[in-house]
Amino acid sequence: MIERDGLGAAGRGLRQYLLAVAAALDAPAWFCEVDAPATAYLALEQRLARFPDHETALLWDERDGWAAAVESATGEDVVVLAYLGEDVLPAPEAVVAFVRGLYGDSYPGQPDPPDFRRPGAPDDFDERLAAYAGDDVCLPEGQA
Image 1 (cartoon, rainbow, N blue to C red):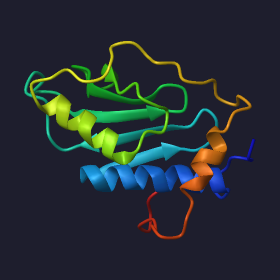
Image 2 (image 1 turned 180 degrees about the vertical axis):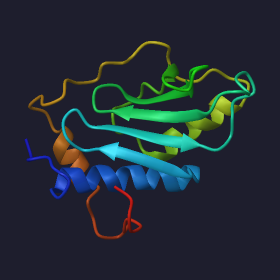
Image 3 (image 1 turned 90 degrees about the vertical axis):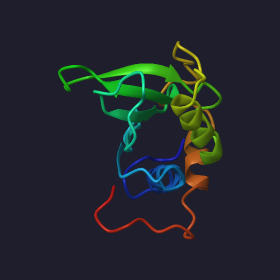
Image 4 (image 1 turned 135 degrees about the vertical axis):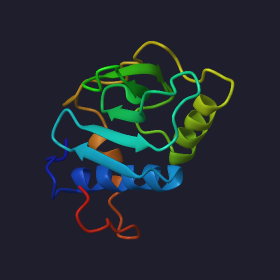
């Protein structure tokens, strides 16, 4: 397992992966936590027709991958609507297709968490993250 912190290859790779997904979705804001368990939040500008009064977001974590969510009525919590369920690190294009399905007439993904892996498990997850740490995409200043 690669040492994971904000400066290591896995941490940089996670940020690059999220930047690629955010760019593909034209997401206005995102946030990630690279320490195990790694998590991320991507705000989506468009609201879902079936939840017009609630902000929409994508959540990601290293156990279940991507999930679509809306803010609760109080705005303090998020309610997961569906999990993408393909892979913990699917290609950005798969995430875009998932989001398009959400805004369409379909109900993409799956209702239950896929439970792909356990944080800290001796698998190739950190190496897969590190593969995204190439220098061809630079983070805008101030985003982490």
